[in-house]
Every structure is written in structure tokens, then in C-alpha cells.
Length: 127
Image 1 (tube, one colour):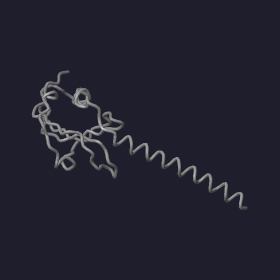
Image 2 (spheres, rainbow, N blue to C red; image 1 turned 180 degrees about the horizontal axis):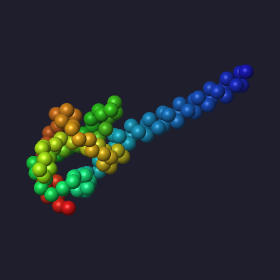
Image 3 (cartoon, rainbow, N blue to C red; image 1 turned 45 degrees about the horizontal axis):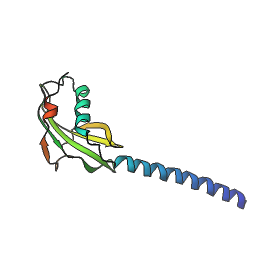
Image 4 (tube, rainbow, N blue to C red; image 1 turned 90 degrees about the vertical axis):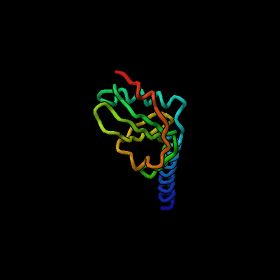
């Protein structure tokens, strides 16, 4: 009986170790800062993300910063722009392993304290 308890303990310890390693990898991936070309990556993404990438105006971007999102620290960039024939939009760009992961629209609350700077590269988008 003791051998069975010992074997079960070892199996559970291995599962816990795997879970801890996966958690540590996720934390490390989320907290790796974006590379120096993060703005070019955002422009390339937005070219395909927007229905009509021409005519973007009033584009602003924040510096990459760690923000808590979904109970995890993530590197993010706040993006504010007005697309052609649309209202102003605040988006949150998320990074994972230093690369653009996804964009969350309606990020006004998450970006309320962001310090924006002009983002003319986004305003020069073409098809």
C-alpha cells in the first residue's frame, strides 16, 4: 500500500511540475518586451485589419508598457486612430514573446492613463 501511495505522490508531483513550468513559460512570454520594429508590425497588421486602410487620421500610439490584463501582466501598446468614415477608436495591442499577438478594440478604459505620441506611419497606410 505504501508503494502505491509513493507512486501516486510521484505522479502528482510530476503533473504539478509540468503545470508550474507551463505557467512560468506563459509569464515569460507575456513579459518579453516587443522588438524595436513593433510600430512597423502594427502598421502591417492594421493594413489587413482595417476594411479600408486608406484615410486613417488622428493616429496616436503609446510606448510599450506592462499592463495587467485578464489577471496577467502583458506588454501592450495603446493605439488611437480614426479610420475612414468611422469614429475614433482606442485599441490595445497585445504582445507575446515580443511579437504582436492580437488587438483588442474598445480599450478606452485600459488606455485611460496612456501617454500618446503621434503615429504618422499609420496615417500613411495604403492598400
